[in-house]
Image 1 (tube, rainbow, N blue to C red):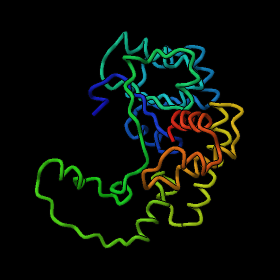
Image 2 (cartoon, rainbow, N blue to C red):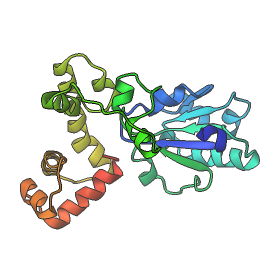
Image 3 (spheres, rainbow, N blue to C red):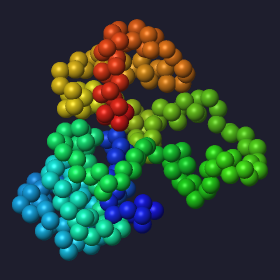
Length: 242
C-alpha cells in the first residue's frame, strides 16, 4: 500500500525483526551495501548504479554508504513516480548520519516483531480488535490457553527466528545472545563508555515491570542507578528501538 502511495519507503525497527527479509518479498532489485564490492561500486557512481534497474529497488544497509540517501533523493526529485525504493539499515544509521536528505522523500515505516496472528499463520482473518472497533457483533471466545501458555508466548518473543524455533533451549540461547550484544556492542556504537552491566540491570528492571505500572524511583532503585543515568539509558534504548 505504501509503495503505491510513495516513491521511497524507509523501513525502521530493532535488529532481527526481519526488515530485509520482508522487503525482499516486494523488491525486484536488491542492492546489498553490506557487500564491500557492491558498496565500492556504489560510492564510485551511486546514480549510475540506481539507474536502469527494475523497481522497486531495495537498498539494504544504507548506512554503509551514507551518500545512498542523497542518490535516492536525486532520483526521486528527478522522477517522483511511486514505488521506486525500499530502504533498510542499521538502527544507528539515523543518529550517525551527518545530514539527512530523506525528509519529504523517504516515508518511514516502523516494523516490529511478529504478531500472534502471524505466528499462527492466520493473517487472512480479521483481528478481534478490528472487529470490535468496526462495531460488528463479536462472538464470545473462550481461550483454551492457560496462564502457563500465555507466559510461554511472552517468553517466546516476536522476533522471527526464536519465535519460529521449536526448541526452548535454542530460543533461550538466541534471546540471551541478543541481549548480550545489545548492551555491549550496539549500545557502545551509539553511546561509547556506557557500563554494560549497569545497562543490563536497568533493562532487567524494565522487563520485570513490563506487565504493570511502576514509578520511576522503583526502577532506579531496582537497577541501582541514579535518575540522570536512567534518563540517559531511556534515550539510549529508544535510539536502539528497544
